[in-house]
Each structure stands twice: as C-alpha cells, then as structure tokens.
Amino acid sequence: MADSGSEQLRGNGQLIKSLNRSRILECLQQGEPLSRVELAARTGISLPAVVKLVEELEQEGLVVCVGAGPSSGGRRPLLFAYNSRAGYVVGLDVGATKIAGGILDLEGNILATETVPTHSTEPSPVHVGERVKRLVEQLVAQTGVDLTKVLGIGIGVPGIPDAEGNIGLAPGLHRDQSRTVDDVADERRALVGSHTAIADRGNGQLPGTGHLSPNGHDSHRDQRWADGAYSNQRKSTEMKTGGMGNDGAGSVQGSNDDEIVALGAYLQAELGRPVYMDNDVNAFLRGEAWKGALQGAKHAVAVTIGTGIGVALLVNGDVYQGARGSAGEIGYWLIGALGPIARSSGYGPLESFAAGPGIARRYVARLKARGGSSAVLDLAGGDMRNITARLVAEGAMLGDSLALDVWRETAETLGVALANLCCLMDPEVLVLAGGVSRAPRELLLDPVRRIVETLVPYPPKIVLSQLKEQAAILGAAALVLESRRSSISYTTAAIKA
Image 1 (cartoon, one colour):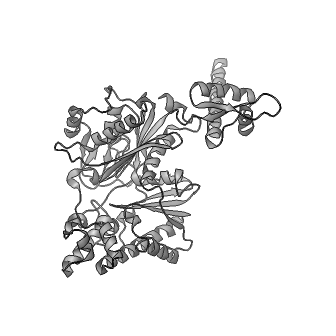
Image 2: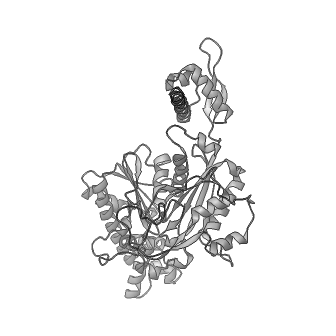
Image 3: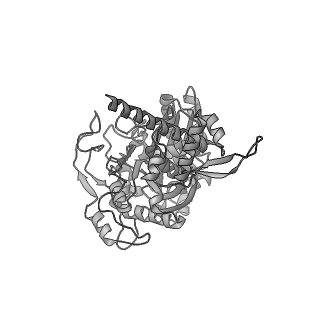
C-alpha cells in the first residue's frame, strides 16, 4: 500500500509541474517579457518553483532571456519571453484549383507562402499528394527551417478527412472530375467537414520513411500514388445515421462510389511529420478566430463562396462539427425552386446555383437563349467558354442587363440562405470569403446585408475577410497547435516529437 501511495504522490507532483509549466508558457505568450518575480505574481506559483521551471524551459529553448528590466532598488531582474521560434508549423489550403501553403512560427507569424495549381500541367501528370509534398519541401527550403523542427502539417481540404488521413467525397481533387461551365448544373457537392488528426505513431514517423531531398523528385513515389498504394475504392453504401460507420476508424461512407484520396497517410509517410486535417471552411474559421475578424467572438459563422459554398460554425468559442462532421453544409440547401427534391451526388443545389461556376453557367444559358453580343462576351474575347463569375460581375458594372439580373438573383438567394442560417445560429459576426464574395459590394455584400437585416430578429455584423487566402493557412496551422497542445503539456510534447 505504501508503494501505491508513493506512486500516486509522484504522479500528482508531475501533474502539478506540467500544469505550472503550461501556466508560465501561456503567461509569457500572452504579453510582454516578464521577470521571474512577475511570473510568480501573475501565475500564483511560488517563486522558487518559478525559478526552477524557467531554468528548465530556457534549457529546452521554450523561453529566452531578453535582457534586464528596471531596478526597484536592488539588482536589475532578468526578463524572459516566449520563444516563438522553438518550432514551426506548416499550414496548407488544398482547393479544387490551387494549393496555398505557408510556414509559420508558434505565434502565427507567416515566414513564407507559396501557391501552386492543384492539378499538374506537366506532360507526365504529378498527383495531388506529390504536389502538396513538393510545396512543403519548397517552403522549408525557402525559409531554411530544418524539417525536424516542423511540429506538424495542418491541411484544410475540400472533403471528408478520416482518422487515417484519407479524404472522401472530394471531387475537386480528381483531375477527371474537374468542372466546366456547361456541366456544373449536373454536379452536386458532398464536401462535409471533419476535424480529425492522424494519430501520432511514436515520433510521428511511419515505418519506411527515409531521408528526403528538398528538391528531389522520385518517380517511384509518383507511381505508388498512381498505382493505388495511397488510395482505395470505397464501395457504395448509404450514409450511416448513427455515427461514423464501422468500416474503419473515422471513415465515412458516401452515397456514391468515390475514390478515397489518401493524402494524409502519403504526406506523413513521405515527410515523416505528423499531419492534421480538417475541412477547408473549418480551417478558414479557425484562422479568422485566431488572427482575423472573429477574434474574441464566441458565436460566429464563416461562409466561403467560390467554386462551392461552405459554412463553418463557432459555438461558444469552439468549432462545431455535428454528429458526423457535416455541420454547415448549406450548399445542400434547397431554396425555392432550385431543383427537385432528390439526393445530391456531388455539388448541392444552392452552390450549383450561387457559387462561381453556377453564376457563369446561368449567364451563358441566358445569353444563348437571347442571342447576340454582350459586354461580358466581349470581356471573354467572344468565347463563351471563357466566361467566369468575375467577368459576369465586371459586365454587370458596365451595365450588362443579363449580368445584372444574374447577380440580383444570386444576391437574393444567398441573402435568404444566410438570413435563415443566422435565425438558426444567432451569431455575433458573419464573415464572408471566397472569390464570389469579392464581387463589387453593390452586387453582393450590400444586398445580402439588407436582406439579413430585414429578416433576422437580431442580425449579426457582416464583414468581408481581410485575411483572404491567409485565413485558411493560419487556421490549418492553428489546427496543429490545438491538436498537439493539451491542457497541461502546452507545446512541450510537440517540440520533443
């Protein structure tokens, strides 16, 4: 019994030490450099304990001495600060058309960013996984950061990431499913979000991972991806209604056959760093809550309108996922006469109508029906295949009547959808992002605000994202820090991984 009691006491002592380390680190990260006396006063930890813990943290590189403070009558006290360069994180936003990435320090300062097309234009196509890997290597090489100092890679993806890093129901990640203006009407989106991380295995490195050349290219790795070493086929089964299903940890069963993109497993195996994944709109929300328009908000909504339409929900300060990770999929909403009551197999009714490709498609259909020329067609060089939502917006500002009608309908439909959402969620702030959201404010933002303010009993503040593409990069990086940080260990375990 005595031995059991001793073990319990030792366990409690270690727990208290971990909690105190965390409190000191959090205190330093939130403000200016502090002396050990000031740390003791602010944290409530005894001064002898603070002295010992600060010494340990300094030896580990988590805090640094930045000089001496003013004297209060005796020796000038040493000041200590949180070392934001003790480790680094990579944040990636993988979309249907482009991949944006950045490497950040632990305070969220972006050291470098790069953007590449999602799909290769090379004669021998390079698959998405290899393109993402090359982008990570490029960021690391550009900043001179040692890859072993990267605590993890956070990725926002347009689909469902499961616990093994596979992405299901992600049509934008398959080249042969790239959309054109004419076939958008037949596509429905099933991009449901799931916040999940690949579980660390030991030091976060999978068996068989070797040294990688930052600029090298291994055709065997490309072939393994192409041959299915990092992908599989998920058979058609109806979506489960009572959980995540039973065909694998965190896996998701869709309504149609779809190829699973094993992006997470591929990157972790090739780069030897932990990979954390979330839906791209959830990543955007995290970025806005960390560094953008949602700082300090407890209840908020983030909406992206681009190739599709996605929503992320902040409820009581936490990202709300739903029972199966599908919360916020308003792209599926059927408003008015947007289509028949039928199960969507790809892009949903609302986004097929009001997202970028839908705006272009509707304009082209009306122009074909009317015939003749138009300002938008002139902007497209006389080729209807070149018409995009951006050109439709430019044409509307030039007085193109068809373009004005298309944008009026788009704004009204989105305004009603977002008003319904706000009535349900009662957010403090709604932040908009994505290519469509950057249309001239008189075409979209102003009418959407008027509709929401008219229909919602307590309308939220509606703002445009100022972070833009950086929001998802920041949010993906925040996912790494949040996932690697427990309430007692803070970033220590992550740095030692």
